[in-house]
Image 1 (cartoon, rainbow, N blue to C red):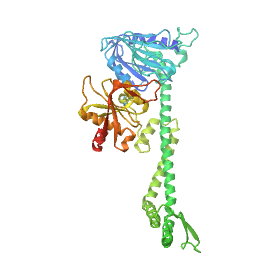
Image 2: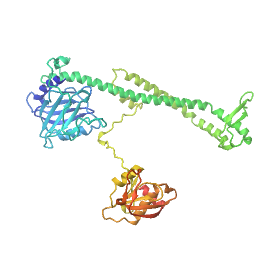
Image 3: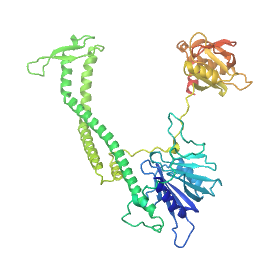
Image 4: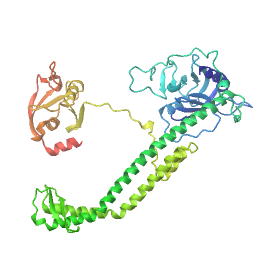
Length: 503
């Protein structure tokens, strides 16, 4: 509630104002500790830790008095930027913005010598932390706007920060205070700030506990999801091994069928799909139908029966051991799932033990620092020809138009097979540069290769400056006309083409 934020800011402002930022400790995905040093006083605390959370379930702001586990792993670019911009700075002021659930932390004496502010938007599921510059221009956001959205985002990097819609004008007269909303903690707050920030202590005990419960639930769900996937694989493996066991039990029958087929081998002909023979291995020698591959010779069909018999025997020794291990792993995973349902069990400890025992793989955490921006698709492939010159080859008919009229200069050489469809090929040239004959020939080979003429290895190829290539109005994709140029005969040298494609 906005009224609670106002009470907290009033309590925290005199404690935090003028403090020096010692460090910003990241607690991904959406929390941080702002560790500050107040001016030393005889009875004042040496260090204060301000917890700011943009969690969708428990967005909050308070002094952190309980111990916090240090995050082990990549922090992300936002937390790294905060340390670069704010470490050593002075926290000049803490203010509530427009009576809403937004807190502005103003910083001066920053490493960049420019004013910075951290906007903590504690607005439920849309909570966010935003670093702004001197003119309130957005420098970075902890939670970026969705990549795909029907309308433009409220704020983005480089734009001026603006508060979210529906801002409050202040706490309602009948709204409950923090003391009324959050019960008094059973234990007194530890440390020298116990008498200075009692409201903060109430928020930490109430919302901090809720946040821990949510974190435990999230860890438990992830653990169960990973365990179920592993259990599904283990059950599939057991099922497959049991099928193999049943197949191996029929290994002797396969050998017997081979012996029966061998006895009538001279009477078989290619093209038969089956044959009936007396089954000497069964009382009364009834007729038995043996399946054949009509595409194979009789001797090849006979060989298949005996090869299958040998294959079934080869895995017999290890199959039972594999089946036992797979069954045991399935039972252990079922026990892990059962333990994870117990709310008294720590899911993090269960996860670590399962990883140690080899039941689960260590969870992989993507390092946001190594995340690469998606590379835009280009309408052409790139190759290097004689003299290190660049050659661009269109991918599709539409891409041919994009290459020729948007990704080529007028002085570049354009090529295309004369008597059949194919890719547009552009040999890139600098202003006033003459194309070496060897480079032109190699680019022509690429034009032949990326056309139906590649089957014959030779073709007539049109060669013209790009400025002499024109697109008729309403023409199909890839269809152009020429106002100049020449035609040359190109014969592909396979070894030379292979080097071009490999490069």
